[in-house]
Length: 240
Image (tube, rainbow, N blue to C red):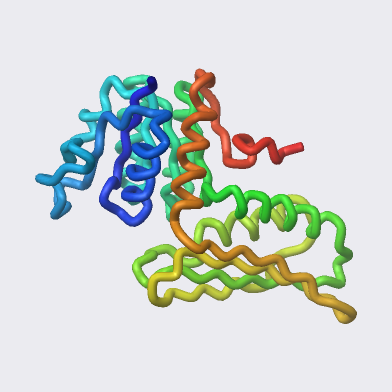
């Protein structure tokens, strides 16, 4: 059984990843790591102590990281040094930080995706098809909504959708409306509108389990990889 480390284990995503990983039993959850300033550093989860040092992950096969940009980059450097595969779901990284992840993937395999949900990645594919197939008479706009605790806006998923449209067509997303309200897990809506019709693609996340489950699927995908940068579209074979 392969050993799994999880950083940000007491965060909203981290807690669900821990629970599902333990329930699934595919991985042995061997290291749980939180920020040194966390109030949970003297606790345990399922009998596993919560540590504050990334060095706790040494010897693990894969690390799943949903933290903050600076912490993620520190973890990338450690995993690169120790040959630990990574699944990264952190958003809000700078271009320089993203480049460091790209550079590290020359040494270790990394799944790096703004959204680990299977459904959202199918949505990416559908939006790509629409962007390719609709004429320039269609205007494109987008709305995304998340909980009030989410720091980055627009969301990483919304940025991915907008970049996807622009990269494969002459179209651009004309505007992204960001909503931060209550405990919304994640809603994304892309609207293609012409003078004759409106096409809407919408994804509504009911629970964070769709993201946590996707992260664990991504971790399994990495088991036979030695290096390289991958997205959830690679994991789900949606690039064809």
